[in-house]
Amino acid sequence: MSQVVLGLVRASHPEPAAAVTTVAALLAWGVGHPPAGIAAVALTVLASQLAIGWVNDRLDADRDAAVGRRDKPVANGRLRRRTVTVAGVLAAVVTPLPAFALHPAAALWATVALVSALLYNWPLKSTPASVLPYAVSFGALPAFVVLALPGSPTPPAWLVAAGALLGAGAHFANVLPDLADDTRTGVRGLPHRLGPSGSRAAAVGLLLAATATLALGPPGPPSWAGLAAIAVAAVVPPAVWYAGRAASLRGERPVAIFRAVMLVALLDVVLLVASGRLV
Image (cartoon, rainbow, N blue to C red):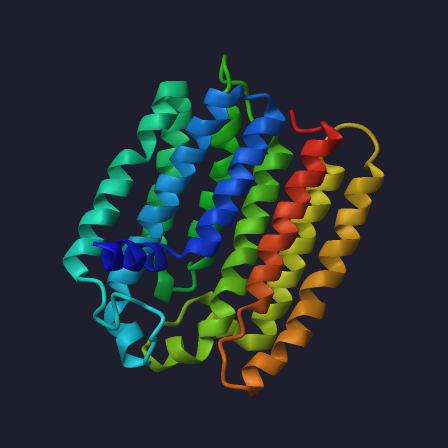
């Protein structure tokens, strides 16, 4: 049983799942949710992230096995395909339930985010529209968090736009470590068509645009914290990518830039919440 649980954790893409859930919980706190509301938001997002990760690893099992991904428990046979399929379906069914307890509109947008992400897993991953589900799902995330408030207020357009830009940037950063393996197995999404240099530029540019939107979008002059966040977004991802090239030379997967995107996203939300300029 412990091996199955460990395999499910590894197949869930735990790093992005934890990062996205933390971002959602921070947003919920920042917009004024009480503790029960924050918990419901976090549970909704965690369930959706688990569903997305498990379905992704199930659909990619043959491709992962073909390129020797020993870190993938479904591909290497340590986790049964049926087990991860059932887990993914159950997590998807559970996703809107905590959100519905807050507000039906919130449950709708949580479902939109989930369905969009699942459409990335199949069939959009191998098309030029591969970035679209990331933009839609990450844009729907702050909409869900705000709509879950009592009275279901309208989410600020700048907050939704920042989420969409961040999601699009995360797509390019997430795919970068797998470009070569994906090409070998026939995956041809937008990052693969742009190539490594184009994808790195897109990831950095979109992250910078998302950070600038968060800093400049709210009414009033930007805070010093917001301007500092823009500077961090401009410097950290390129620096981390440069440092991460050593991993590529050692034959390791260059995941540094994706982690940098997640780090800057968390920093952006912390600074935004601390400034009190969310809604």
